[in-house]
Every structure is written in structure tokens, then in C-alpha cells.
Length: 76
Image 1: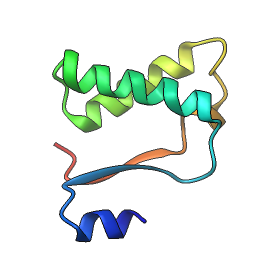
Image 2: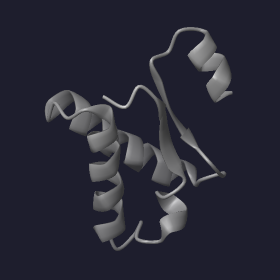
Image 3: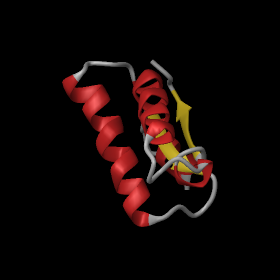
């Protein structure tokens, strides 16, 4: 699926390496986009910050909820 988006012209894609809980995914993506849009972080830095925030959260601490997400393509 990632290759298809890249071939269609996407500069980067955030993908999960395994199935992740929908609520956890929504929480991670909220934090990720806040990092990129409100805090003006590059995509790689925004994803890393979102993952670290999830790790520090008591509800989402387990790596299952956040560690499977990777950024592929242009990292800046």
C-alpha cells in the first residue's frame, strides 16, 4: 500500500507495521498532526514526539499502541 501512495506522488507516508487499536491510532495521529501543523515540526520529528508522548501516557504506554508506526519517503 505504501508503494502505491509513493508511486502516485506522495512525498511521504506514515504506515503501521502491524494492526493497531483504532483509538490508539486516532490518538497518535492527533498528536502527530498537532506536531506538524501547530508546532511546525518536520514530519519525522512530529512522529517521534507523538510516539514519545504516547509512551509516557499511562493508557497508551505499551509499544503495541505506538511503536508500529513508521515514516517512509522524504523524512523532512
